[in-house]
Length: 224
Image (tube, rainbow, N blue to C red; front, side):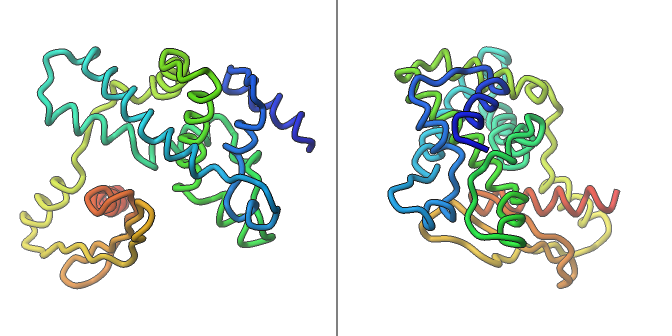
């Protein structure tokens, strides 16, 4: 598929036409592809910008939608929206991961495309690209972000970690979270959930707290 065709198809899906098409191509370029092609930029800087932008837009929207809600409630609600699980689902719903430029072949390529974190990064990179292309017009970016998040804005917020600890206390079981992997240079944590010293679930998140919640959700979903 040519770059022009790819750009046109993505623009139709996201309902935004880029002035600088290179920004959109950059948003769909994984580091593995950039490493194999000299003078090619990957999406990491755009993802960095988009990450902060999504959190800002969601924070403002939640305060407007729930004007009487307390800070703790708003924080939990925001965390349920601005996370890899939710944002990766948007990329799945829009069927956009197929356009990602990935290096390598076979299993490596499939692993990258199947990664929840990568799909989340792509969504945030799109947001960053739209922000820059629109001249930092937060209203334009907000229209895109809120349209994609609208199905989740009024969803019930479940504190899976608290629920897990409550269930374990009732059963007299000991729950413990063990860090399996972390990255000093990127917001990445992988933790294992152990119950009575047996690992029962794994969670990945941008920080330890988010990873613990993800592991708790995985365990409770499978066992309820």
